Image (cartoon, rainbow, N blue to C red; front, side, top):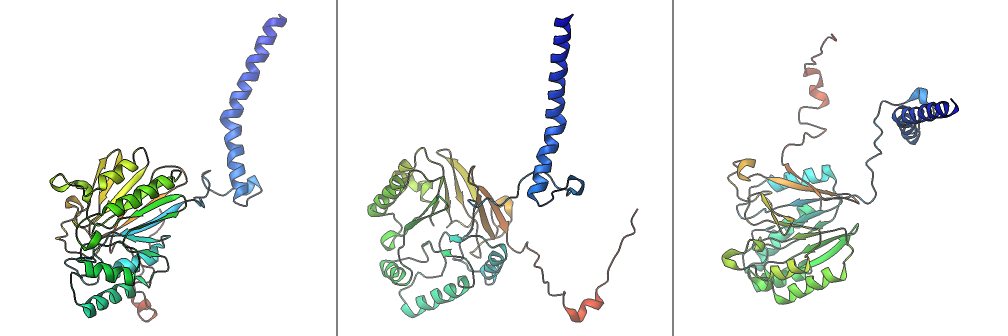
Length: 316
């Protein structure tokens, strides 16, 4: 009898524990969340889920613009800059063809760079230049780049992510020099503990035209076993593929020549938005231009406010 009572007591205790886990514990978790939001009294709970605020201080968010040239369409990049300022990424990267270029005319080249610099100078966050074949079309233009902007290829680290910005116009022609390859191999080896590596270049040399990858394969070998994502431009057609277990993305255009047949053909003007949390893989969104409705629209002025017809609905 005592043994049977002990068993029943044990079962009842287990049942109570199960009820606690199923009913009481979730309520306690939600209450803790409410207290985190500043609500100390459970009778005044906010109608909100228990997920924490999405304010990870290690979160990385940046934007990428693609080709402006050739075939520049006036007003498109100007709109992209305005939208970037509204979106407020931490910084902005490019994949080249920022000016028409392809010239030996110093006055013309300075004029084109000044026009572009004036546009991106309106951004309240850093803008990183990456050269394309329009920006460095010959050795003289490469010298002008170095004088005006600095290194044609470089790296930086932000929030434990490694950024490799390649120059596929090394020496003023379509190539990646051995010196550049050695530079990036050393950078990769010197930074083994980064959470992710992002690679930017203009021409997608990784496609291996006619069996050639211009030495980029050596950089890929140095990245073996690491998490990375590659971004390029040049083709003005958005596409992506998986290579070596990682994403290789060719961006569309941000004002460069395009038939604009739409997403189905990868022909669209867009900004790429990349988010990387402290743990996880990058989330990549391609935001079409002219799809943001600004707070102040042309019709929303005080002078014509009375002309607006307000439509109301009757609650059912």
